[in-house]
Length: 148
Image 1: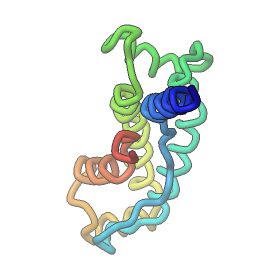
Image 2: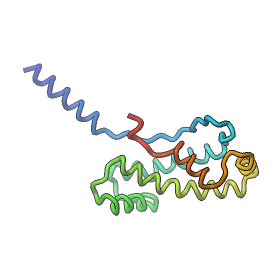
Image 3: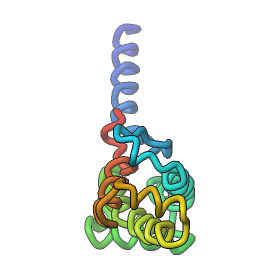
Image 4: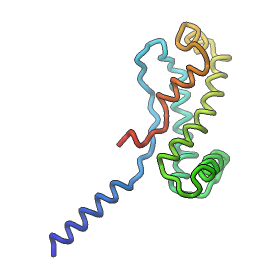
């Protein structure tokens, strides 16, 4: 009888571990190319991502009703694409679309208004704004599946 209950408990723990969610993180990325190490950009993206996770991502992951514009945009995108049958991987994909739309506008503004960032970009870090956005998308993407 005890072996049977241990087996059932073990199976329940395995199922719980498989179905658990993993919250994305926001940490400064490492850069292999020192010319692309622009701390102001990294810090801006990390701060923005932390805010996005707590204000948008987490409530939608927990299936809470949207309470602000960010949650509403994310929820509507998920609903259009996947109806109500979305999973965390799909939240990651939709979050990448919405989050990096905001990052793109902030990056362009930083390049225009911040002399330190503008000089770093001019010194060969990136050829154009699209290359810069693509680079940071790869470094800071929402990809909770890769964390397992």
